[in-house]
Length: 166
Figure 1 (cartoon, one colour):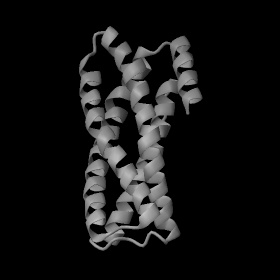
Figure 2 (cartoon, rainbow, N blue to C red; figure 1 turned 135 degrees about the horizontal axis):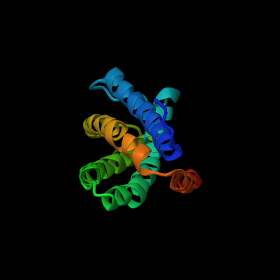
Figure 3 (cartoon, rainbow, N blue to C red; figure 1 turned 90 degrees about the horizontal axis):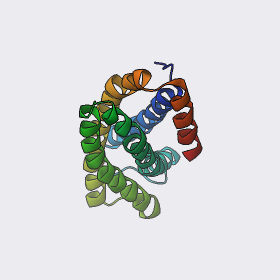
């Protein structure tokens, strides 16, 4: 999918990158099942590092940009529903993402115990499910709304600010 507005395109690209991280995390969980994976395995390490960094940093920056720059503009135009709904999802996703990131870092340092793997697996599974649904909503509702909302000058200003923050 491509968008004519650069801001929407940048957010779409971030969504695709997040989906890739989430899918690799999902594959790790599916492959390992109930037995903790070997954190000495380079692919496991890569997945845990990506999960820790991308989920915690990228998602929190992405959410903050949407809430501070985009939802407010939509609300000013009279569309409060999208922003209100997505803010609520952000409030649920951020603590899950932070928890998964912390557990991933801990596992990279000390490995998984049976108990820590169970907790990680369950928390990550919830994050995966919620994040994929959230991204789908943004792709179907928020990004198309930006196509109509943003004029070329505002789009350039916002996309430059967003790109500079990354």
